Each structure stands twice: as structure tokens, then as C-alpha cells.
Length: 484
Length: 95
Image (cartoon, rainbow over all chains, first blue to last red; front, side):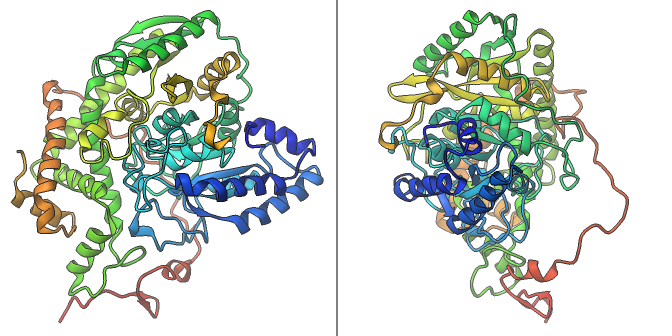
């Protein structure tokens, strides 16, 4: 059953070929068998899952089931799940049982989806390799000596090894798209504000966005139908109707104008990845799409902008962790300041502390204009570059990541080298645009992803363009040999 | 190096993070490298450019001032490290 897409599994459930309990057990068995090799789950919610599956079967039998009824899903451990440990990959929240439910997980549960468990991630979503998790690194199912990418690496690895037929992720600078690319998964970051951030533990609030990770664009469309929509409990949620994202999947892409940004194909791009992206371009050309070279003149500044804006917002967001109201508290504090400092010093890992310090510095007296204001000004220049590009083209295409999955430990001591692995994804978050990464080929047995970037709220078109590629190729069907 | 050990200690204090003396040189080196990367921003003239705080340039949404949440104090205090009689406990702050 695990080699089927979510859409195929939904059809099987509705046709009565198997029950939700059988399906859920199948994936729970796979988790039990394979998770020790991958470390992709922090918590498995077996009892809850089976109880929910039983209820889903009853609704299916009564004919009350919606399209996602009874289908299992794995949630990134950044989403608060009431009564279930929610760690955000941090020692700080190792003892945190969420007292309320995030909007994303609540909507998916209301649609009848079965939560299998909570997936591993970089601590507070800060990382591109899943090595910063307090719970240890996640392994890439395509080569377990390599990283799955990050920060939604647990979700990506679980999807790649088909320990779940669907997963959720969050993307602040590439955290859905980059691990999707490195693990041969389809992952969509929607427009900023499209999916509610309520109950999603905050990292950088002007960039964070949740999205679906699945085998295909069609599956992501089904998931986004449920995830997207206005939520008054998120102050940046956008009040705008949600289209049926499956409706336009089969639209012909003849005459589609695709922009190829020059800076995505510079010397930093691995030549094997470049070759695969070249083959993708040929495939789309064959389908009638037209390619136009575009310039994004400020693109090279997106990593520097991001490493001011994201740490500044993180230093502010993470100030809530003080050892008083929830989370880790240091033992025997000698006074209040000692309680704050040691709870935070012992509760946060090194990368989180680095980013809090960079943000604190950038926002401190005398430096605000030179760093934060400057970065926000350049952020506008980057967003304006995209606006100009979308006057000429319908979508923009390029590699998701400059290389395939790197070795665990390879970049662990060099934060700047790690940051540069998100060079093609970060600008999309700064501008607030939607982007999707889909499987595009294999280089030396490792997956390569192609990224498609759309205009604001143009997710339906991105999914259409991705689906058309997946109708013509079978890269998204490939599974790692040891996990078949 | 952009940051020296004293500056790192000062930033850590502002952020209320206890870092060990042995960790200070490592943080000084790493944080300086990150600031080096960030310094590239100075290569572009941004005079007159409006800072972008929100990707959709949306303003803060307001709501009417009505009570919409129920009292969940007991639920929230269940996960607190130390509480008594509905209060969060911290080390003594006033002698």
C-alpha cells in the first residue's frame, strides 16, 4: 500500500479495498520497522491513530467521508498537538505537552486525517540538514550517511521511505523545498499568509509558512485544499477565498511562459544538478512551454538579508522561553537572572543560540539602522525584482538546492557554508511568494529537485505545472531500494 | 574579526543566554563570519527605499474589543515548571 500516492489510497479507501485501520496499521508497522534507521519521528501516536482510524472507517461506512478521510499523515513537530508532546526539536520543549491544537493539524483532523506522529526537525526549524535537532540527526533514506535536508527533514525522510503517505512541513527559508529536493518528495511552500500560523511554533514570523509534503503535486493539492484558508487567530492570515487546487491540475501548459533566472545557474551550481535541470527544461519545452531568461539583480543579497531578518525575528520570538511558564527550567537558580540565563543557555542548542545572538546584536541600540532597516530595504528590492519578472513570465524555474544531499557532519562546523545551501530558496520567502520542489532526476543515486516559483496566490498554477511534469515522468515514483 | 570576546559576552547578556567561557572564542569566530556575510548588504545603495516589514505590505488587522477566549489558566499552568495557588513561582526578586 505504501507505494501508492495519497490520491490512490483515497480511492482504495472509498472503494472498500482496505480500511483506514488496515492502512494506518500498515504505516505504523513501517515506522516501527524503519524509523530506528532514519530517526524521522520524535513521537509516534499509535493508540490515538488507531482510535481515529476506527472512527474514520465508521464515517466511510456511513458515506459521510470527505476526500482525505482515513488517510494517515505525519506532522512536523513544530505544530502544537493538544495532549501530545510537541518539542520543536529542542531540549527546551522536551517536556512540553501542548495545551492547544494548531489550526493546520486541527483542520486536517477535522477532514478525517489520521496523525501517525510528530516528525524530527532542526531545532526551532533553524537548520538545513536536520543535524541541529536535540533528538539527533535524521538520515536520508537514499543514503543513510547523508542528511535529508532541513528543517522539515523528518517529514521528508518519512515521506521518502514511505513511513507516511503525506506529511506537513514549514518553510522559513527553504525548509519544505530543500528537504523535499534532497529526499525525492514533492513539497509546496504556499504564499505567505495562505496557511494559518496559529499553533505553529514561531521562528521568523514575517517568513514562516506551513505547507504539504507528499509524493505528487496532485496529493499536495488535496492537502492544501484542507490546510489553506483564513484564520482569525493568526494576525497575518489572509482573508481570501480558497480555490479547489485540484481543479486546474490537468490544464494544458502549451504557451506557458517560464522564466529562467540567470543567478540560479551561476558557478555555485553543481554541474550534475545543472544537467538534470537542463533535462527538465527540455521536457517542458516538449510540452509546449516557452522559456525566457530573466534577471533577478538583487538575488545574490538574499542570504545576507535573510541572516539579519530571520535572526532578528527569532531573537524576539524566542524570548518567550524563560523557564517560568513552560519548557525547560535550569536547576537551583540563584536568582531570577540566573534562572533566565541558564534555562536558555542549557535549553537551546548552539545554532539557536547563534541566531538569537545575531538577532540581538542586529536589533541592539546603535545597530538597528545599519542591520535591520538596511536588510528590510534590500528585502524590498528583492521582492520588486520578482514583481518585474512576473510581468514577463507565468512561473519561474530553477534548481531547488545547489547540490544533492551532503554527508552528515560535512557542514556542521561551518554555519555560513550551511546557510548557502538555501541560496535558491530564501529569496522566495523574503518576497512571500509560493514555491514548489518536485523530483527531477537522480545524480549518482541521489535525488535532485526542480523548484517552480509562482506569483502571489498562484498555487493552483504551480500545482498544475508540477502535475504536468509528473504526468510525463516517473521520478516522483522512485523509492529508495532499502525501504521498498 | 568583527566581534571580540567582550562583545560576545555583552550580546549573550542582552539575550539572557549563559554561555561558558570556553564557548566564547567559538561564538566570536562564528558570529563574526555571519556578520561578514551580512556586510555584503552595504554594497547596495538603499537611499529612499521603503523598508519591507511584511511580504504583502499588509497592515495589522484589528478586531472589536470583545472577550473571545475562555479561562484556561489551569490547563496552561499544568505545564509550568513551578506554580502555587495559580501563580508562577520564580526565585525571590525582592529581599
